[in-house]
Length: 254
Image (tube, rainbow, N blue to C red; front, top):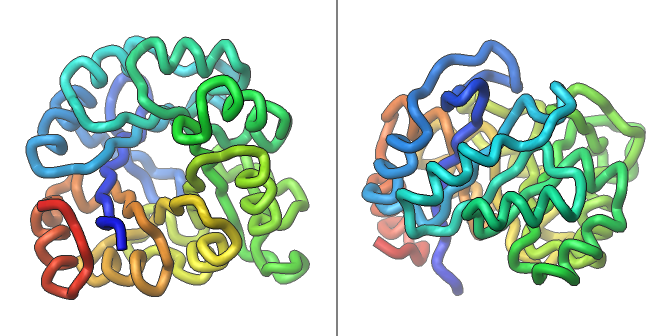
């Protein structure tokens, strides 16, 4: 079994790291460069950075954020938010990101996934999928876009399968029902996607205890565990998470 990876996430707004609950009520969580440096020292395997207001404000990703953070870390950086064209992807990768993450743009223009995967390789393409419970959907989960504000009437699990077929190298599901609540990853949603695809799944949204990380990897089937609040507000360290997972028998790189 490959090692389970830990991925802190910097949600960005107005040049600062922020964190909210269910995508609202944002609190300041510090400077992105300081946070990035700190997390790499702490043992993060990868780092995610999401420009959470880009799509809602209908603008492009702030490239200077990417440049500044990429300059101080050696671990892989995934950038998402406001990436809607092949040119956007090129700019973000040139600015120093190792991978890009797309959400709304991929739903609106699925061919962009094929194009990105063919141009840069599947390993550099992550598709973020926001889902919300809806019993009218075959899987029980509906796809939502625009920072969790717009349901699109499509099945979220079927979309994950299509993303993999089109060349996505990893899938990052976030449950709108769980984000920022610290009540644990939405294991049902994460597992449904992990069972539907063979590429790595990044568990996201709701981690609040060490047990939640273990459940994300075991019951949720995720290979990468993303978290924000618990790291930003120092509930516990990345090292504590890794030592806990190791004690519970999961492979990690300490």
